[in-house]
Length: 240
Length: 87
Length: 201
Image (cartoon, rainbow over all chains, first blue to last red; front, top):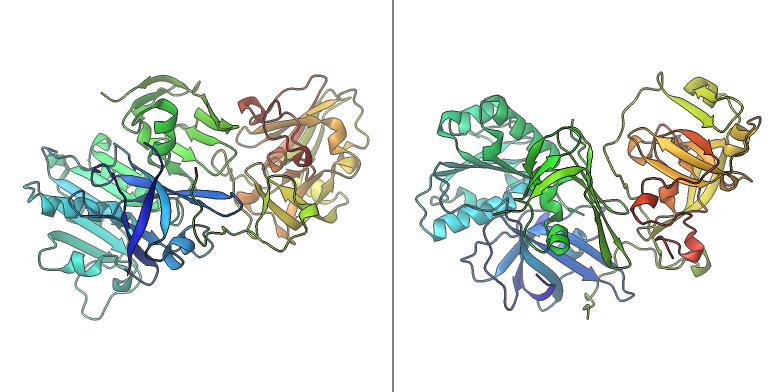
C-alpha cells in the first residue's frame, strides 16, 4: 500500500462546515464501504502533514469522494476545504481498515449510528447497500446539531434513502416530529433492532459520542462483540 | 471515562499496515496487564506524541509504543501477551 | 519522490528570526497538546511535590506550601521533538534552584516522575542555574490539565518531552536511568540546538 497521487475533480459544498472532494486516483484498488484513506500534504520546504479521512463514496461509485469538516484551528482541514482546486494533486494511500468495513453477509440486521462527521463512512455503506440492491435490513440513526448540519441532507432525506432516522440535538425546524436530543439509552432502545436479533452495529463520530452510544447499546443487552466503533477524536473532525 | 482526545486502533491502521505488513485492525490482542482480549481496532490510541502510544481500553495499561527513528519503525509490544493476526 | 502540494503551508509562522529556530523545527502559533496517556484529574488537596532519592531526607511540599514559595514569571521559547517550536511562551513557576536549595545530595542525575506513570531523565545540573521551573501558570492563567496542570516541569533548553506534564516529584540518582521516551529510542539528553532527537544522534 503505497502513496499515490489523487487529482481533484470536483468540490461540493455539503454544509457550512463540510465539503466533499472528488478525486481521480489512477489504479485505485476497489475499497470496502467504511474504509478510509490517509492523506499526505507536503509544503515547499519539505514540511509534511498527514491525516486520515473516511471514504464517502461506495466501491461502485466512479471516483473516490472524501468529505472534510473544516476545523477552525486545524492545519489540514481548512486547506482541503478552502484551498484545493480542481486539477490539484494530493497524495493518498489506501484503502485502509478491515474492522470498520461493510460485511457482505452479516446474517443479522445492521444498525448504523453516526454523530456529526461520523456519518461519512456510514453514507458509503448505504450507497453500497443501494448500489448492490442488498437484501440486508439496514437502519441509520444520524445525530446532527440541526438540519443545516446534516451532511448529505438531500440524499439522506430523499424518498429512496431507506430507513434513516435523524436526531437534531440543538435546533429543530418548526413542525419537526423527529428526535431532538442526544442519543441516550431510551432513544437507542427506540430505534435500534432489539438485542435479541443480535444486530451488527457500526458507531462512528467524536470519541465522546461513540462511547455514549456504545455504552447505551451494551446496557440494552447488545453484545459488545457485535458493536464496531470508529472514534474521530474530540471534535470529530481532523484526526491527526 | 475515556479521554476525549484519544482515538482507537482504526486511526493507526495505515501505520500498523506499514509496520506489520498487512491489515491489523481485526487482529486480536490480549493485554498483559489485565488479560482483556479484543480487536486491535478497539485499543486506545494516542497519536499526538513523539510516538504512537497504544493502551488497553479496559485498564489503560501500555500495550505498544511505535516510534519512527530516522525513518525506521521501532515497535515495542511488550504490553501484549498475544497478538493473533487476522485469518 | 514526494510531490509538493500546491498552496499548502501548514500553520507555521513565516516571519521569524531564523536564529531562534533550532535545526529541523517549524514555528507554530498554536500550542499543540501531546499525550502518551489520559489526562490525570487529581485534586489540589491531594497534590504534593517531592524531592527524594539520594538526599539527606525527602523534601515534600503540599500545594499551599508550594504556592507560598517565591515564584517568577519567565518568557521562553519551547521546542518539541515532533518539530514544532513556540516562541515567547510565558510561564509562572517556582525555580528549581529555589526548590533544590537546602537539599543535600551527591546525585548527578534526576528522574522526574508524573501522575499517570510518565518519567523523563536529565542531569541534575540541567535543573540549576536558572534553567528549570515547576510551572503552574501559562500566559498568566492556571496551567490547564491538557498542558500539564496543575504543575509541570519546565526545562526549555531541552526538547519539550523533558518538561514532564503532571509532575509530582524528582528522584535524585547516582546513575542515569532512561525515562519513558528515552527508553523508546529518543535521545538521552535532547539538546534541540544539536538536534539530538534520537539515541545516537
